Length: 168
Image (cartoon, rainbow, N blue to C red; front, side, top):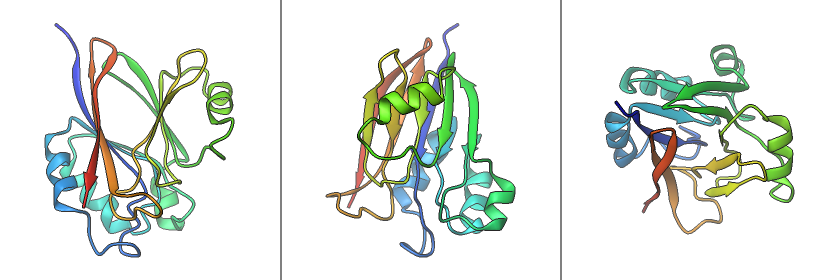
């Protein structure tokens, strides 16, 4: 029997500062995911409560804009084995230049690292094979053309069907 795990990746929701609520398309995708991964900067604990009730499973961390309540409920780094891959989640990874090398050195035991902070979708592979994924932000596009989140499947221990979803 093969493992087939549907993941929704999101970060930097910044509710209610950047948006009053999460986009409907994102919430619909939460319902279809086996695991929701959130890479921090929730801002409001109500958003964490919402995803905890809607997601089958939530793998999440706090970010630099998250206050004491969220920091008490969420770790700085989260790890889980999903579909045969070793995942990690962290909010900040530092500047884009040198990111792959830094993350490979910091997380040598991972296959995939999901991160946030920049609001810029990112998909690269570090020397040694660590896959780095940033879903962007579903609420605050900053200098990007669209607000975004990602979906990906883990099939037989490999990432498949990675998609960046644009929200207009």
